[in-house]
Length: 171
Image (cartoon, rainbow, N blue to C red; front, side, top):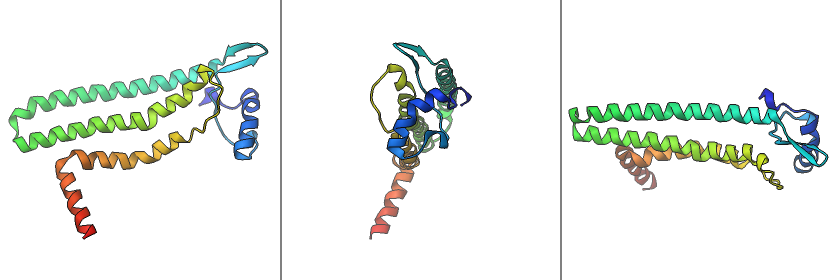
């Protein structure tokens, strides 16, 4: 966050848009901005503080995914080794929980990480458009529902219990 603290360059770049869209003065609200380039006349120079910020965010995310992949492979191998020692119904349940974990790993990627990376990296491609980044907030807000629906739709016992609950509720 320290890399992208507001300065006069980001204030002057965003002042008109923030005043027009939200009706507030940019210096009166807290924010951080990924501003890809400094405009020095006809010259554009990269704002290295924004590059450092994106490098840090990307490194943290890659570390996070590395841990998830390592733990997923470890859990899968351990589960496969023990499958011969358990009953068929328990084996089926363990496989369903494994698929739930896979889907619960993919869901935040689709709902949070990809939209955030689009918002963060878009300035470096020098796009000349203004867009509302609130779709990131919508994805963040929808995720708890999606997470619950994953469990309810993948684990058979939960799916049947949920259907029974709905039919009793509607009757």
